[in-house]
Image (cartoon, rainbow, N blue to C red):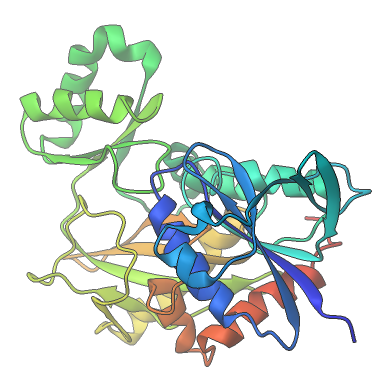
Length: 357
């Protein structure tokens, strides 16, 4: 029986480039070789696409693009090809692909852009589609959808570029409404770049300007002193939620200025919470996953406030996939060792490729 040709796309131009390399290296090591033939496609920091025939170790240490056997390559948007086109010495050739696992975080990858290209190509891919990825990346859209579904989030306001001329007044209005303990962040950001925790009017305006240097919209949230809960959700028609974990900080409270906890080193599973809160957290995670149109898999971050209220923080449609990543460790609680997890994500992508939502 012919092996399934699985392409792993990694790297990218976003700030999460190194995180993508780390995840891709471990994923490629753990794809079952008795079922899959792996095709590696790297995108360097400048946006150049390369077919990479080397080892996962080269990806992990960042030397992959120096491999002399790399060749220019791109995924053809023409569905007649259903694969990548490589260019070497002026000659082109087509490598067929059966399924893609895009391991691209942040802008130009986790925001729906690569998913749009794959939709054009007709190649199945693991994870959410264009709209869900874009909506989860843009925190203003996440907030608005959650508001429609009566899922509580931290109180928030949006500042747009059109309001820059009256920024002092706008910031004063928000500070009057929420106080000065605030979290300021770019609306579109996959990492903690441009995110600030502020507690004075002077810090607030400065933080907004920093956030605007990373995006054209800025989210301001009222600071929430809370514990940080984590859930992994996977599936299509009937999404399943993992046991609830908790990121344990030194003071047992989560610092909202650290939004990009990608390692599971500080993750405790199960979280020390009541059965009622556990069940409610799972319900919120699955409802939010479905409301935003997610499919395949996602990591859901939740806050548990001191008075026992659960708030949705964010949904990551392209979480880290290292063995020690939060998503992977949560899925392990459902019986998915790393190799089984990667196999399941690819298998579900193929099974659900022809479905419309």
